[in-house]
Length: 211
Ligand SMILES: Nc1nc2c(c(=O)[nH]1)N[C@H]1C(S)=C(S)[C@@H](COP(=O)(O)O)O[C@H]1N2
Ligand SMILES: [Mo]
Image (tube, rainbow, N blue to C red; front, side, top):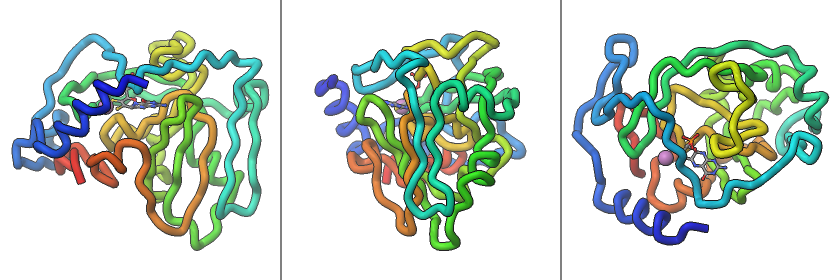
């Protein structure tokens, strides 16, 4: 674990780094306040990039759902796949436009597991020990998916391969790399960064950088 990097980010959260105090309407402004557009694809994580082969990879879904799910790589890839093009907005102020992905739509996962009416939040857990919380309403959308290809190539390990969550309308820390498990919960709980000063929701157009 990169303790120095974690400490720096916690300090930035305390200081409210990069906050402009502005908000914008996503229907009118493609670029959220305080963001600058880059064409490269920076790598950000805790300094552990787990090496999970497709053969070793499996993904489970549990908690407040009718049908617990376990997918190995073969059954994941056999799911209906869709293509997505989106923009990425990282809380450290870079945005990257027009990313083309392939993956399993989150709505098809929700249709299979059938969350109980009490389920309102998800905790997403990854192979590096990372976690992040997201409201069910924020994944029950057509633009949220579990991606395994980026720009028509298999997703690199450094960007979360074999597969990662992608939630484009929230800051990119919500898009868990090396996805391993999702738990459905009735109440909200902080994940890794949320427990260290990041916002519980993370809407870039409202600059919900820190909580
Ligand atoms: N498993 C895991 N997912 C993670 C992280 C992490 O440390 N571990 N970092 C998050 C953060 S802070 C960001 S900005 C993005 C970065 O994704 P990238 O490295 O593909 O740009 O991944 C998010 N997902
Ligand atoms: Mo980030």
